Image (cartoon, rainbow over all chains, first blue to last red):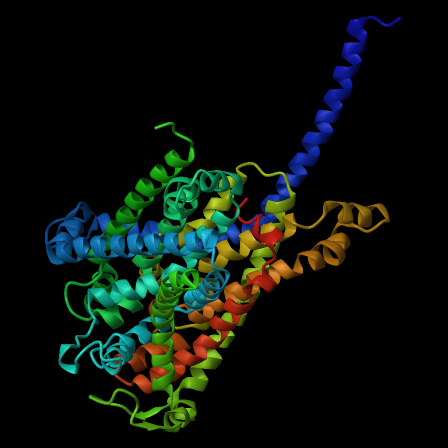
Length: 309
Length: 272
């Protein structure tokens, strides 16, 4: 009869060799994985992370001027705020309001797609809302440039229908045009994600609320929306980043001042070769994006986590 | 009778709201289409005063630049797809099938290029590429487009490989196929629809990309979006509209067929 210790020792030995074999395969697997991942990772490091570092360094590095040696400082930021302070505020307000408007409209459309009771209206809406999904920003900008102009098709249609007199027409090619283009382009994306999340919900809570006599608006706001808040937050943060990246829309639609800081960055570089201020503006756009991401995601996740409040 | 009447306002209301939405969505598209076939249109005419295709001839004549830009755009998009697939097939396979430490961190690293506003990065890539003499080259533009699309192609590839049934691979190994042969004859063909979807995404993104090309492509590489931008800023709405229409065809085509390419079981594994 083998003693319990012997048996344990045997098992331990077997498991130790199993661990060795496992470790060896794990190492081989890790090596293989590293090899397979290396080219793609290298590409991101070289052509994204390195230029990103370049931007940060460029924003804080002060070149030698006269007797002063090169150094570090906030000089470029001071100049950026000095020259483009209004544009920075304008960018924050304009992009935030575009994102909020997109969010509200997306919830309304997705909510109707989920809770709507008129089949033909739901089907039409589902077919309708997606069209701009893959239309490039630059094409959207060109469309809006002609559509929203004083003599564009929008005013012409309203005049033709007798809603407006020709003398009352105004062009919308300013901040309103930028908001309209951003919302027009991003709405299908946010709606698609939110409607997808709503469709995946457990319908029983909705049915229960409906049986208790709750209206559809109340069901949307109090039962459906809290459950898809995280998806909505992610979609809106991504939209914020996208809007902060687009150069063509503000250049083509909002020619005057104030304008978005993307335009200012391109201008600093193309007209002055001034990478310092351009990079400082870039870092400011990162900080704005980071702040918004933090607010939305914190809010979205806290709500999602079933906080009793 | 009264029931039918009381239903009428709701019916009308829905129709009205949907009509307004349709106007907001299709109005700009129609306006663009009109400009593409306009010869003369100025205030106060509500619709084009003269229709015709004269500008199409101009755009597609050798001096119009559209053919050259289209060729550049297609070459860049095709090269971007090839490079993206070459990078994302091995990376996606590793992420889907192999044990990895810090897997989430690696997935997020690929997301970085789309998590930051990309203009500051493009300005600095342009400065770096200028020193490397990559500015104004097709290769430079392809690299920029590839990095931007990498999150899509790697995530979709990982999802596509994860959706392949492992037991089929094991069956191939059991009847004597080596790992490479199993990959080439079982895993890759089964993941192909997902990879195809990622290729189409990357192709479209590259075709439509403006900001990166604007910084890195100057002065020698003109793509369709750049041609459109220059025409629009120069006030030539016809040329801009015609170029925009060329860009619209693949975008809308893809919107209509996206669900056929991207299957639900792949979508459900995205980013996980």
